[in-house]
Image (tube, rainbow, N blue to C red; front, side, top):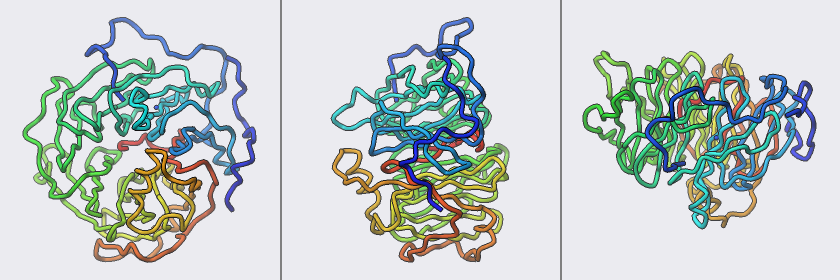
Length: 399
């Protein structure tokens, strides 16, 4: 059953109110302990049943009860919110507003106090980018898609603590060990930076793909999954010392004009869930090198896998709202405020039910077949929702 977004309920156990892209910042934050930007006061811990999703075309963030599949509250004050991540204790939510082209001054990362669900700080940035968070949620990586540079934010203090020089048009940066950062830049480069020295480790290498859209690192840091505009997902070996280090070891073709985008690994790193801008949902089995997929004919944006790996949340526009191959164009129109209100839904899947489905023995899918997939239910929410952030999920190692 799909919950009603019009029901603005207080979730059981919801905390009583008693009290996430570049700035002109120094390379390091000032010495000494930094206080949390929160105003203080008593507040119960954020429950694992609570989630947040960014409603891109509505300029809002929606708070969810994932036990009852209902909307709790809508938070306003954002400008084309894209990625969002919670801190370790769930006290702060980071939201990156990639802004409208008419409002370049609003490139920023917004910091929300989850006790009051109010924006308490805005970190200005000089361009849009897809934020990523470290595995322990202590560091937020904020790249600049329009030119060069990447900032690192301390998620406890909401302060910029380091800025790195990058290649132009860097879409994403991520690190599993806080020693080596992997980055992707247009038109098709993947490279690394030594996080201590800031030096690029060797030349960038060409993946032989075109226009990388998103990338995600496995929980153990062993591989990097890169989705590109060529309708494929490449798996790159990121284990130092491995004979195939820094090379593409697997390639999955998600179907013509499927436009794969935001992905998420299962906790054991075996499965990769990929949402496609034209509605293609692909699940990759990296162990057996097989894949299963279905097409919602919608903007299927982000995937989030629960901490125990049992549930998967997929954000999308309603089924049948986007024709195959037009999804990226619909998203671009929404960025400029030109798209109609398509609405939104969070699809909820039982992961094991999907893994029990037949997987293709060759890593190829057709993007033409319409199917709703093996769905548990869903939540109707907002307009073009982008991913779900919850403490009941592994920290996202990708945008």
